[in-house]
Length: 210
Image 1: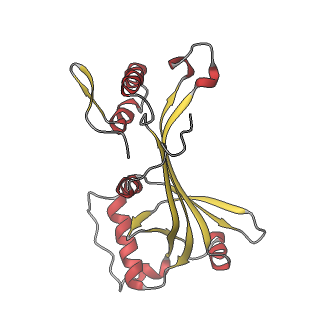
Image 2 (image 1 turned 180 degrees about the vertical axis):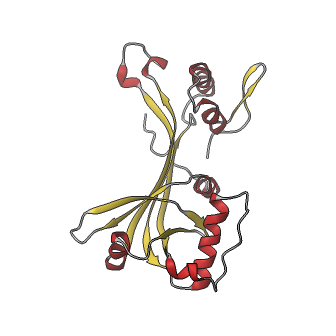
């Protein structure tokens, strides 16, 4: 069975929702020797672009100044599916439910103070949604002590595997096994899959197709 098309996230709103939820992404730039450098970064997705804050000096900034083509990736492993869900003797049947977003685009170092302010306030709002801080203003010196990296996507692709490729009866059976195994991520995984845990068991409340 060819799964490639089935696993593609077709909803841009779902992609944005996922990017708003995740806290760590990985930027890949090309170093002076032609090798990819991959670094985990906090980020915010604003106005269809990725923004990250950084020290004002560093290898990734040098890489971007030399070659503005970059990659950016965000993923979440939802649930490892042990092989015995399918066959207690065949280890090759182990699988994983996941969501991932891959961006290819161009990066730049933001110099406009208004845009830097917007990005930093966006980062604060994302990572400290409870508030309890003073918003950053354009006149603040903090803007001079931090670099803001902006990635404008040329391509933005999402893949996910949450049971959407399965027959509804098989998907329900998988959900029951996940609930029974009760891993630390089980309840959140079932929620993402579109299930609700009730007093009577599991109930499908949302279509898992994105």
